[in-house]
Image 1 (cartoon, rainbow, N blue to C red):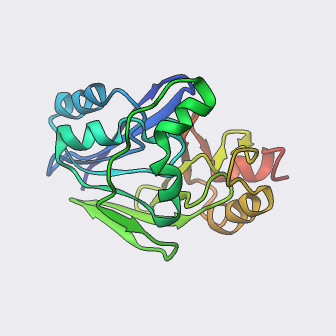
Image 2 (cartoon, rainbow, N blue to C red; image 1 turned 180 degrees about the horizontal axis):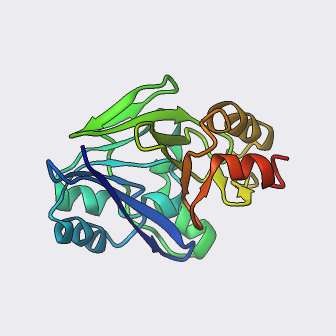
Length: 212
C-alpha cells in the first residue's frame, strides 16, 4: 500500500486543495475542489492518477468553486454532508454577497454524507469521516488512520481555529468538535488544513492559543 498526497493553494482565500493518490492503482480522491478545475485535473493526470471521488469538507465558496467543472472533467462523484447542502446551493449568491460577482453553480452532490462516522475508500485510500461542525454547517474532517493524517478543513489550523462569524458559525460548537473529534487523535497525527501549513495534533493541543 502506497499513498501519496499532493496539494495546491489557490484563490483569493489561499485555500488548500488536496489530491490523495494510491500509487499502486493510480486512483485518487480530491479533497476540496477549490477552483481552477483544469489545474486540479492536470495535477492528477501529471501524476498518472485518475480522480475517482471529489469530497468537500464544507460548502463555503472557497472550498467548492470548482466542484461542477471538476466533476464534468473527471466524471467522479461529488460527496458532501447533507447539512452543507443549503449553503452549497447558494454558491453564486455567496460571490455576490462577499465580492459583488456571481460564482459558478456548484456540482450536484451524488451522495450526502451524515454525521455518523463511516469509512470512504478508493483503492487502498481509507478516509474516516469526522463530523466537526461549528465553522460551517455540515463540516467534515477526513482521517487517514493508517497514515496518521487528518484533513481538518477549516476546523483546526496551525495556531488557530476556524472563524465562526459567518452564517451558520457557532464558536462553542466548533470548540466542542475540535475537542471531541480532533484532539482525541494521537499526538503525532499530522493536520492538513484548509488554509496554511501542516501541524500536528500534539502541537496544537500544547500551543494553540484558542485551545490551551
